[in-house]
Length: 438
Ligand SMILES: NC(=O)c1ccc[n+]([C@@H]2O[C@H](COP(=O)([O-])OP(=O)(O)OC[C@H]3O[C@@H](n4cnc5c(N)ncnc54)[C@H](OP(=O)(O)O)[C@@H]3O)[C@@H](O)[C@H]2O)c1
Image (cartoon, rainbow, N blue to C red):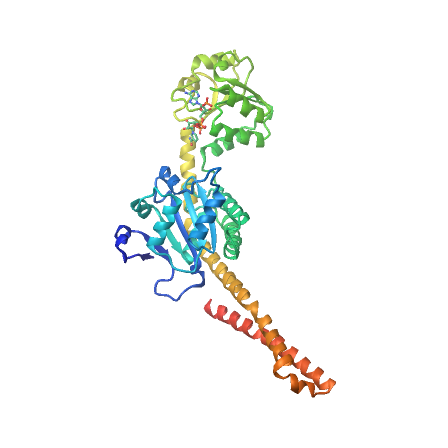
């Protein structure tokens, strides 16, 4: 890891920026063209990450802003990934990065960013370190929630978009191919993605364990993000009888429509006449909205045990309801503990994932070097053919004219043989160099 020493006057602001670089004291590595400038939840509070996101609008679409950035900084390729907890600018550029470059770069992203903020927030990776960082992001060991696969979907989407906008090329294409392979390997050979760590998915697993009928009537109270996720799960599990209640009736109806159910305003819960088997509550209300009086009303004399899932913080079902009625209560407190336990289980896998990624890095290096040689060697057959043509048609033209047909045919045959053999020599030599470096 290189700690940059200030060399320019403005650099005194920067003496804590670190560049994670693999070649200190080593010879130049082929991978050094890969660079990552990133801002993540590790260095920056989540609410500040937004100021490093490239702003875009209808007038200045993202494609145009990225293209301008790529041209202004002479990046041969650029991949941009923005999520709620990280922003990544991955690019390919042959020259080494320096601090003024990083400053100018983020000033173009957002002119309001101060030197001090850039200094405190940006992490820089070059060469091997850049590849490993991307692998660790993709394997979600750098994530807030270790083992969540969502990040890889976001990386893939970012790539597809930048590729469609002609921002990426051969270097990033090959890296993405090997990244996908590496992540498959990680999920196949480690347990990093096992055991659910989100409260919603844990609650839904527990609900599935209840072996309820698919026709069981489910009351979904709240139509925010969490219950929208819950609804997706219910549909996936084949539940067909879902009724939504929400403070604003529009959202209740909207969510209910996607479930082929009915949507009502929350105020209509008190006069709801149908029976129910499951109640899932999740709203932003800061006090209980299901009290004993309302619950009694909803039961209408039914004494059968009901499943209650309350995902709200603080709880929206009053504790008296659970105490006084026959309920199968899925408690968020227990779910949170289980989520923490599962997360620490996943974290134990991190060192194994890192080892696997080092091996994957070797595979990528080999493929990358092979690819660079392949590109460089494309010229060899063309040049050798040119030399042969010049020899036959210019340099030895007169001598050849004096030869009989059979001799001329033999010389042609020999030249073609030489041509084929000569093409193989540099290719074989290059392969040997790669092998000896492994
Ligand atoms: N334990 C966990 O890990 C976890 C995870 C996610 C969420 N949660 C909790 O789940 C709750 C909802 O989260 P969310 O992400 O779904 O929020 P959200 O997307 O903001 O939705 C909030 C929902 O609550 C309703 N609401 C807000 N204030 C209300 C009030 N005073 N009375 C009745 N309804 C009200 C809203 O109705 P309108 O449509 O009318 O605005 C909306 O349906 C929060 O308590 C959150 O802490 C917990």
